Image 1 (cartoon, rainbow, N blue to C red):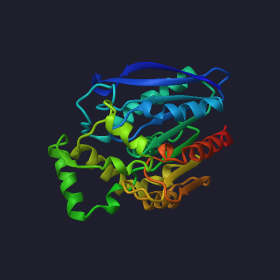
Image 2: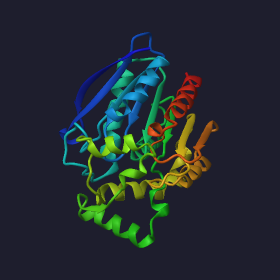
Image 3: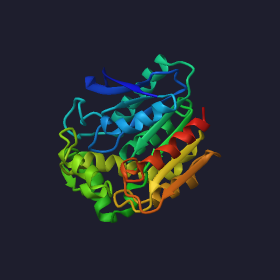
Length: 279
């Protein structure tokens, strides 16, 4: 089923212009997916995912986070996670207002997984089900304690300070995906700033005690060869959530972006089938 993509925008927290896309299937919609992308990237890297969802009659809404892609704000600057979650909450509200009565599935990848997790904890009645892909919900677990302490301090006093280089070849085993990522002008190619590092660390430190608030159906997909966000964090998350319908699907040998691996069609089919089971 073909989909039509439309670019739109709204004013986010602090008046920052947030650009988002909608992908609308030609036929009758059965549900709506609201998607949060990962650090440094942007919503249109999920064109193929939205197209696959459209085949199942699912609408997709996805924003470029503030400081990312086409949205306003200083590049990748974040002072507090609430800035990201407030923008995402606005997008969920727009999708709900425009399609009342349809099931709402919130989906987040990597940093977007941390955003969706945090949003889900704070707004447990606003969505039908949750999907997380390689979520950064335990980012501190593989970082030495000294670096964690330094990142938290720097994130408070100098949130825009570049602190950590993330290798592009860790996103996918597909060389074409890596080349496109490196050439994409909408992708931020600099170091991870301290503000985002601090925000992700704080999500990870509080995740075990906050996860019980996630009671909706949950699917987590994660490559077990992910070098950017190790799969152990997803295993811990599944153990801590309050949902009685929570599942972790691990993909042997896959890297961080499971939607962009050579086996992407299998992953997208798995996720789409699970979403359909929640409608």
